[in-house]
Image (cartoon, rainbow, N blue to C red; front, side, top):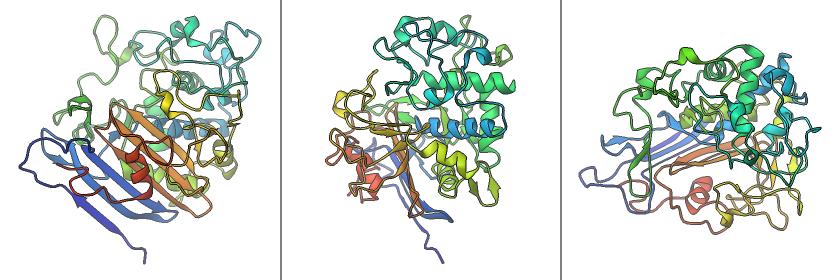
Length: 410
């Protein structure tokens, strides 16, 4: 019988404040093709309420959201509702083109692999409820002037609101509800994009995200569902009846706004370990899983940026060296690449996340059939790692190393 180890460590509840320099909360779940094999949860989901974190608490998982979105896209591709290589302009109902390369179509494959010629310089996350994504795409700053679509890797969050817009136009469904129908609900995962589709009970268990001074920056619900789960309209109102298919693909934050538990993400990982089927539920064909996980881009001098250029840290050079369809591939093993937080040279697939003081990762060794998901909060100023472009806390959580006395708690 598989060994199940559950460790919950919350120390010194009467003392005030989190341990300086360490995470407010950290959770790590190890799993294989058959299920969870070990769980470690330390610290607080909510410091003010002294609520201990668990592997079942929903957290804004940041860019791992992109991988989950890709599963939804591939489901629609299998159903014939989307085409990875079609020009998106006819579907969107407006001309989507790089202004310097008007003859190069922008496709879902290019968006999902960050090769569409986009940047984040014009913004992407603050589109109001009654706004339109095409207004951002009309700004020249949204485009990488030096590179045509399909020729260069540049990590750009903006591509995923476009992906969400295409999904809405293809189905007529609101993105968050569509992702629940396509991915979360069939797998028995309680989660949502930007809280609108989650119930009060789930929202009350949210993991609060903190800055370096332990101030709440996201999901400080105080036991209630947020009054407005999206960016309000320009008049301040928050009426989701204003939603129109494909107009504002940024509304539910497809690039990073998925709220999901570590155990829920482990189920996503097992789905990919098992070639698209888990516990009797098949979401994808093995061919679709291969399409997602095979590198669409591999770093070579001049063909892409190996760190997030828009608002990222140049010290992270070497973080991205291989990328599929919303899937990172680790341990590239070539000059300029520092993409192995495990330090063992094994080629894993998955995705990292970093936003609002949270660091997260979902990594799968498909050959051995094992995986790990982790997150840590309150890590805005996380120290650099010693063996990769990842932070020290990510390197430790990847390998399952002990945090030491007091770390990850008070």
